[in-house]
Amino acid sequence: MSDHSAFWGELRSPSGVLFEIETRSLRELMFSIRFLAVTQSAKLVARGFIPPDSAPCARCDDLIIREATDPEVLCPDCRDIDGP
Image 1: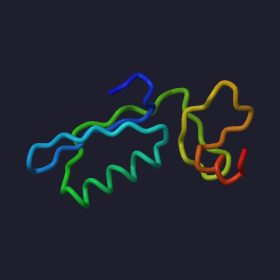
Image 2: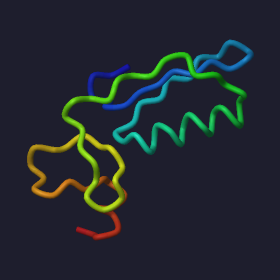
Image 3: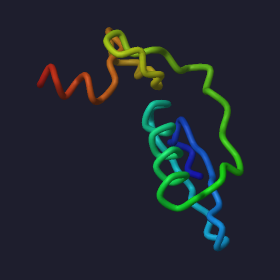
């Protein structure tokens, strides 16, 4: 796992393949875990702790890592809706 990933998990498929997931939001991690569990019959092996510098998005309540330069906490998806 990289040092830049806030949320991570590892899943193993019945054939022994190990899937490593790294995301910047908890919602994206949960989606990826569910997707691999359904499509690959993978089982969760490990999941990282929620980082202490995480904060809920002001719009959708997804848990993300707060950037020091952002005055308002918005996840990337909500930022895309607002535009530049």
